[in-house]
Amino acid sequence: MFVELAIFIISSLFFYYLYVHKKIHNFFVKRGVKFLPGIPMFGNVCNSLFTTKHFIEDLEIVYRAFPDERYVGFIEGTTPIILIRDPELAKAITVKDFDHFVNHKDFFSKDTDPLFGGSLFMMKDDKWRDMRFTLSPAFTGSKMRLMMNFMSEVSHNIMDYLKENNSDEIHVDDLVRRYTLDVIASAGFGLQVNSVKDKKNDFFKMGINLFYFNIKQKIIIFISTQFPKIGKKLGLTLFSKEVMDFFKTTVKNTISYRENNNVVRPDMIQLLMEATKGTLKAGNTEKDEVTTTEDSKSKTVAREWTEDEIIGQVFIFFAAGFESSAGAITMAIHELAVNPEVQEKLYQEIKQFEKINKVLSYENVSQLKYMDCVINETLRKWTAAIFMDRVCTKPYELPPPRKGGKPYLLNPGDIVYNMVNVIHMDEKYHPKPEVFDPDRFSDENKHKIQPFTFVPFGMGPRNCIASRFAILEMKVFLYDLVLHYKVVKSKRTSDPIRLHSNDFNIRALGGTYVKFEPRD
Ligand code: HEM
Ligand SMILES: *[C@@H]1O[C@H](CO)[C@@H](O)[C@H](O)[C@H]1NC(C)=O
Ligand SMILES: *[C@@H]1O[C@H](CO)[C@@H](O)[C@H](O)[C@H]1NC(C)=O
Ligand SMILES: *[C@@H]1O[C@H](CO)[C@@H](O)[C@H](O)[C@H]1NC(C)=O
Image (cartoon, rainbow, N blue to C red):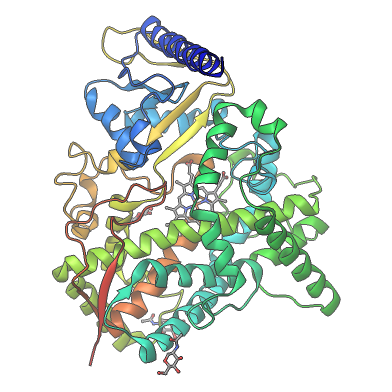
């Protein structure tokens, strides 16, 4: 009896998925959009779901299958998605016609995760506009100058630590995550954490917890994305109660400490506190520098934010700022180890700079031109962006996918993925994409890069709000490291570098291990 029931259920599921799968095929066929058939229930994401490939590679397979299409169909589980191949079309969607594509798709609903769900990244429409406007002043040039001090302080802590504890082989993934964690703790929360010394501090534990999904969390993600109603009924949440409570308590305590002791520190939490009280001037004096949507430039924000909403924003700064920049810095160090001539050129520039300026300052960091090229080349190969997902909010007609094809009408709720990493690695736009060549970005060569084929921080009003912060954070650390150490290969340094496939993060297969040889 039990066996029969099981067979019945499994075969019903099988036929159900077969039916859904067929429906998606018909959907694309009817609209004249090409696609790869994929597998029922999993579509085109089988490899990444079972961790045999990174998600970027699943996208790349579909992207490369149709070199002459402007867009193709991508089947994510049971969801049909339009994958935009053409950079010009991606520009239209993310910049010119942004009004039709204001929101990100719901990865996790607000119920699955209130902190992430309530953050700027997931906010929608006018609420997003207001919050973006509220937060933008935190990332202007003058704020970056102040935040750079926090970065330098943390970077110096790490250099001090390395002086005494430089082992044979450095696990760069770990070391750099301690850097970005301490930076975001300081610049975001106003907390002085020294993660290299205090290895097991709560902050670091929470950060690691957030990004390394165990099997239980993977199942929750699968249920919540495939069967949102069931997920909601079961009250599934992505992050453990422990992690969420930690953030809530930390933010609340910091706010009340500051209020009671009249402490003012130029960090993100301060800005958010001012925003809730309405003391923050919305008509910012640095209007040229504020990254906001055009229409919000002159208006003032009347909306009052609740404490939970504030916590959500501090949380997203933490979540978005910790892993993405750590991945980029780690890959930069890995590339320097396997490209010694690039490293030497960078070292010469830094040494020269130090001779003249003594210390790295916000005023003259832009003199480091080759550093800029190294960072951009790192972000070309290894940005955490993956794609720019957008949900259609107003009907929109895509031009035909090819000459002679018919236009495609997107309806509200339809999802498009604009490609980032696969375009960065397409030889059509970046010749010999595997080669780490910072000179692609030199003054002589820069003009050869087609517009919108290098977008590590996304595009348009919904791009990364903190791109300057991230670039500065990378520069501060690489400057100190390359000035004091020569990064050399150790036994475990992989070359060429391959992407791991355990999760969405950007990390080298087998990890990044190198040796740091002290200079002089
Ligand atoms: C190298 C490091 C980083 C990379 C590669 C990166 C990349 C991105 C990308 C691709 C997006 C989406 C853009 C789009 O869809 O067009 C984004 C959004 C965002 N990033 Fe970053 N990011 C980095 C560092 C940071 C840091 C350090 C913070 C915070 C301190 C941060 C906060 C955010 C936020 C809040 C959003 C959502 C913006 C919105 O929806 O309005 N990111 N980032
Ligand atoms: C670093 O080295 C110092 C001096 O050798 C030692 O006292 C300290 O315990 C080491 N710290 C760590 C975290 O290994
Ligand atoms: C670099 O910045 C420092 C500190 O802001 C300043 O004193 C110095 O004159 C600057 N150097 C150059 C060459 O502009
Ligand atoms: C590096 O990329 C940024 C965009 O992320 C761009 O603004 C900057 O001009 C680039 N630098 C060089 C040297 O190409």
